[in-house]
Every structure is written in C-alpha cells, then in structure tokens.
Image (cartoon, rainbow, N blue to C red; front, side, top):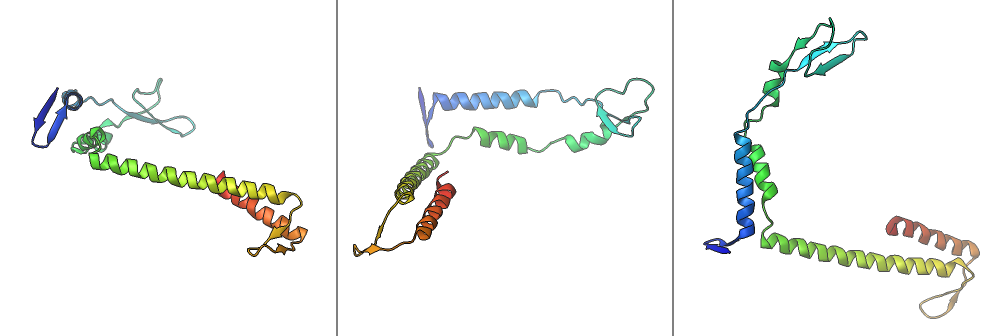
Length: 163
C-alpha cells in the first residue's frame, strides 16, 4: 500500500512508524507524574545517606523531596524533539552520502592494508643477509648497523600504522 502526497510516497512502514511514535508520545503524556519522597540523614560515622524510605530506628532524618522536585522536572518539549530526531529516517541524500563515506573508508582501509603488507614483506626481506640496489641498478654498500636501523624503522612503522 502506498499513499502519494505532494512530498512523495509514504509507505506502510512509514505510517506504522509514525503511528507507533504518536502512540508512545500520547501514552507518555497521560502517564501520571508521581514523585517519591526522598529522605536525607547522617549515620553514626557522619556519612550522609539518601533514600526513598526513612531510616530505621531513632535516626533523625529530613524529607527533602520538595527541595529536589523543581530540579528534576522537564516541562520543555526538548524530550519530544529528541524522540522525533531519534525516529527520523535518513533522507535519500543522507543515505547516498553515508554510502559514499563508507566506500571512501573501505578504499582507505584497503590501501592501508596493501601498504602494511608491503612493509611487512620489506621487513622480512631485510631481516637476513641482504644487499641493496639503488635506482640505477648499482649495489649499495650498507653496514650491518644501517641494515638493523632500517629494519627497526620498518618495525616501528608497522606497529604504529598496521596494528
């Protein structure tokens, strides 16, 4: 079932969602507000306690509900606005943007995985006895200390970026 209006089609799913939201908000608006009494007292060690029930025995306590109630009431429509935002579906433009962001993130993740694999392969290569060749194809003399430093740099880079 599809109902066509000026803003586009409204599906049965959308209607059900709005009816459920409206029903919930209506039920909440007719729920009686009840405030529990809150008591404050100090024990023998001087520690302050709060409870919905007065302390047992002869411990002096003070009923402080009237002092707290104004602080805990929300007579604004902020909560209703929050609920409406929560149940709002993403627009087609927002969905397209989210898909595009997801695709970009997947590409970045794939490039990072490739770079990590390349770095791991390079580390594996220079861990044993090796010789280096420059861009012109000539052998480059590298001391064992330099080779170890290159390996350590690669290890640090792999730990930092590929963990």
